[in-house]
Image (cartoon, rainbow, N blue to C red; front, side, top):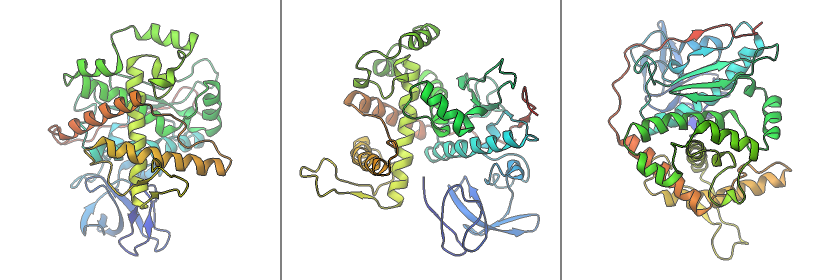
Length: 374
């Protein structure tokens, strides 16, 4: 993720900022320029100080303080490039569900920042009714009879609204003995399944993927049951980035995909701060790194790995000094690094592919009262 600068007063801004803390200008994200811009009212719309353009309008979800992205140039109503992928959203008359949905949107917009930076092929349900990417944010049945399960099914990603509750998410993390569980992690993992369909299955790369991750034709339901009954095999850390990655090749791919997104986006932020790792105690140079490159455009995956390993060692050491858990509680062995390299090449190839035609009509956002909504 980048740091941004207010065009009105030069204040440093962050991706989630809605207004400048120094000069008070309202801020909007311009997806086509991948930048945050100070804006000023101009006629019925806004003028963007980043480029002096006029006639820009906010996504419809700005009305609910769930989005600060601008519509495409020339559009005056509808949903932005990220929100047009929404299907069902929670009951917005319920303050708890509204607050939870806003948290989900923060994570989803960070996901779309990465997808846009890479120019990866993403279609809406209007463009591809059978497999377009769509998100349903669903609340549990209050009677406790039906729990929403986060997952992916042919482009439809369901995210349980309960995951936006920090206490509930931590309870689930502990119950499932996971070292890491975040909303952003869920989005990155589930979209990995979508891109397995798009960049592997539909792009003729099944054989190469199977050579790296294993035979995905094995029964998924049986594999999932075996995982929950027996757990991960012994010494799973030697070949997998997480215990859950051992479940099935599809989950191994999605977990590795998510970690690749973690790595690239975190290194971009480190680069924005000009971070260098050079501990005096390191006598052989294994923990030295200068994170001064843009990992989103890096062709050489070795450069990413060589920066990531020292950086995570430093991050985890600082977290421990604060009495907190490791920020990155994972071990990247050579087999796992090879899988990450496969994802790197897949993303680079996907970014070089001819982009889909521009959408002329934004997808609708179906707002429904979930089961059990107040």
